[in-house]
Amino acid sequence: MEAIGPRSHATVLKVTEPEPPRPLSDVGAKKATSSVIDVRSSLSLSPASCSNDNSSHGGGGSATPATTDTSATFGSRLLTPKQDVFEYNAWDHVDPGSDHERYAEEMIRQQREFPAPAEEKDAYNARPNEFWDQFYQSNQNKFFKDRKWLKLEFPELFNWTSSPRFSSASRVRVMELGCGAGNIVFPLLQEMPDRRLMVHACDFSKTAVEVVKGTREKLQPEDQARCDAFIWDISSDRLPEGVAEGSVDFIVMVFVFSALHPSQWRQTIDNLYKASLLKPGGMVFFRDYGRYDLAQVRFKKHRLLEDNLYARGDGTRVYFFTSEQIHAFFGERFVVEQNAVDRRLIVNRKRKVKMYRVWLQGKFRKPDWLDP
Ligand SMILES: C[S@@+](CC[C@H](N)C(=O)[O-])C[C@H]1O[C@@H](n2cnc3c(N)ncnc32)[C@H](O)[C@@H]1O
Image 1: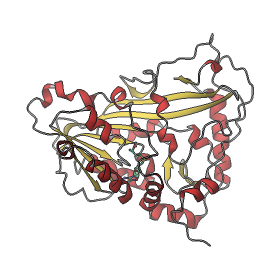
Image 2 (image 1 turned 120 degrees about the horizontal axis):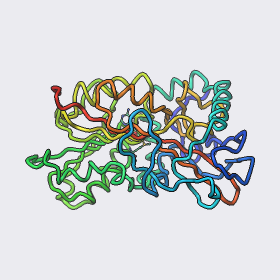
Image 3 (image 1 turned 180 degrees about the horizontal axis):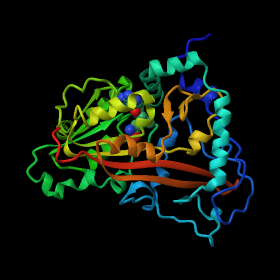
Image 4 (image 1 turned 180 degrees about the vertical axis):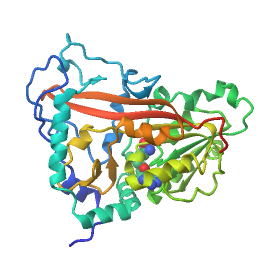
């Protein structure tokens, strides 16, 4: 048996890009003009690219309340019974309905019949960083788009400058976990000229960190001094060197929790909280994949590692959460200020195809009244 390891990007796309499935029925829109949806080739998602879909934030705000949702500001293009679903390319806050749920469950049942072979599973789980290294060797910083929606969804990262809490702070630290190529780090630095801002960018992929360091070198010296990048596995039982315990004001986790194995979730949350990167009162900003997202439903044979956990074609892992899970993980320790489901219906107007995207978004605050 050929050893499983990171492969070239070309091979990855050729061999494993999962073909989108054919849904069972047309669902979700009140005024459908087609009774069959075929999502085949209508959304060119390459591995990990679901997290690259900035269109989910194109419009502004409305989210489906989940366990706790106080201030969702997602897209605002709403589909009413009077509208033709194929009038626009995308709609926010569309409930896919029970037909879609049944369809998704059927797809997942089929995936379970053909899980990834045991020896492949071991390789994906044993050396996950190497698959990401390979991903960044192929893509450098050209894959993910800058997260321009950050300011809309997480304004707290930007408006702290006028908050009394920070009026006497000499440093305000933002730490991004799983920073990838820096698509959050650099827009944040650019948008925030405040000299007190310090951005710590970490990733367990050494190639990703090299990419970030390379971009950092091109910044003005004063901006270089406002960020650093280093290798750290967020599920490790050691905290990173160079970031003092209890020193971080904001943690950003965007499409990184889903890359972990379930056995790593608890240690990772401990790292944010108990071992305490965060200051009391510090916030975690979270965004990740939701259950029955198109990217989950379209996985084909031999990609399923465990329930709701998959290996993409390039060997990187991805898990699809429910908002209840997220609430259980974070709610145990944090004050849940937001835990929302962001749904979007993507439409291929020409082919009369509908596809449902599901993301989760949360804001979790470490209580002020506890010691770090
Ligand atoms: C989908 S990318 C998201 C990158 C970035 N957050 C963004 O939104 O552009 C996931 C990133 O998480 C990193 N990652 C996965 N598991 C990790 C771990 N255990 N520790 C640190 N980084 C990890 C990967 O290397 C990859 O760069």
